Image (cartoon, rainbow, N blue to C red):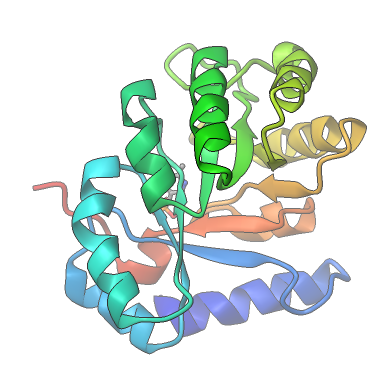
Length: 217
Ligand SMILES: *Cc1c(COP(=O)(O)O)cnc(C)c1O
């Protein structure tokens, strides 16, 4: 599909939902993609990217940031506590705050450096045992605990179960965000980003529809 096509579809979905043009941040998920495709997107003006793996991001983004101004890299994969320090060096936002031990580690590191990336709490809206994220019923308490640590919470993130209708999950996430006074909603991927925008997404995470299928070789 490519970047231009996805931008057009994001804009159309914003219009259809009666939302302002440009109100949805398109995160181009560049994990596991060949570097030339990432550079092509940068050449096309894309500046917000998503990565899943700390090591992979560390090998790629310091160089690319030196070559392209205004880049913002969002961590969207599970974050091990022992990689939190490196993550604070690498990322402008972390979408996967999902447990107290990680929140405590981030709070400690952020305090020491006097800065912290924008944070999103990941909610396991489908209560899938194999998936990360706090359970919907635990979300209010966890959000309050993060705020008590002075963490800069911007919003919530979810990955709905595969193969089903994502819309109820998007609505559930929007409900948790609204009652907790959180503006950010990171939801929607290649297969369902238009539905996510209709449900209020502020950030959509689109990989394969921009860059092509990932080759994990
Ligand atoms: C890989 C990934 C994406 C992008 O998935 P596509 O289906 O390729 O758009 C989005 N969000 C998360 C959390 C991911 O891990």
